[in-house]
Length: 284
Ligand SMILES: NC(=O)c1ccc[n+]([C@@H]2O[C@H](COP(=O)([O-])OP(=O)(O)OC[C@H]3O[C@@H](n4cnc5c(N)ncnc54)[C@H](OP(=O)(O)O)[C@@H]3O)[C@@H](O)[C@H]2O)c1
Image (cartoon, rainbow, N blue to C red; front, top):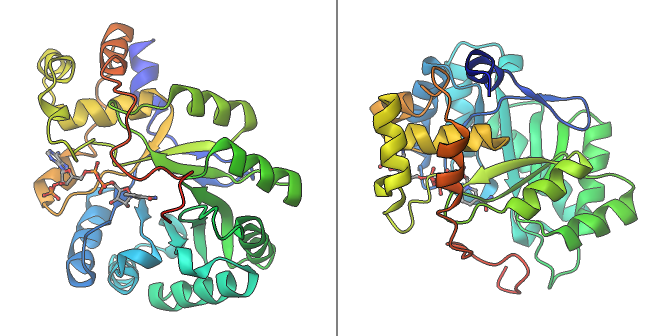
């Protein structure tokens, strides 16, 4: 990779399949309570993040919304994403969930609104996605996406609504790096967004030799190397931290580029095992 191009290229937004521009890196807010979100989201925006990821289920949309309002940034400069929870599948219910999220966030529109889980047992995700498409037509959301969808779910959405979702936010990190799903998305113009990007549920990713060696070589931290790996693997990435220093650290990923060898060594950490729930199961 051309080093200079590699450094700058990933700082630019990606264009989604509906023409909407989305930042490649954002601040994740899972397990950040409402009060804490008021503070950390404002910090993240001050530090330069322009994408914030929340969800109805995180219970922090009020805090996220007030941080955006207090940031002093024009609303159009912030890319807000939220998701509807599993008990809001179905056309009317999805619409009510969206209206509640808009009210909690204190905004007229959400940039990217997603179905949090396909919940195949309910068998309502196609109808739910229809509600998102209608909301997009009305300007209540700019882009209609999904999360934790498998190709079989995405294909049904496309067959029955005529539209591919713009984004699929899925569990993705070096221990479960989903090369087939990423390629499948790319062929269909669906952007891949990584959740749990630091693979922290086992606590060992940031100590892996492939990560530590690259961090040493580039004088960066292990977390920065992993975040950079996501960017160079063409994934939108939304690391979460409750600590100001780490929120800042996680955004300092545009002044170096991993080599192909380093990327491959990090790919080789694949375990084939999810740390989270299997979306094809019936738990959700
Ligand atoms: N769609 C879905 O189903 C789904 C599921 C899970 C998550 N998400 C989204 O994805 C976002 C990210 O996923 P996540 O929050 O599960 O996990 P993550 O961002 O991969 O990891 C967060 C963990 O890493 C630690 N951390 C952050 N920066 C660090 C650094 N520089 N050095 C060392 N440790 C660091 C954090 O600790 P501290 O906070 O103590 O710093 C926290 O324990 C979520 O916040 C949420 O927005 C979506």
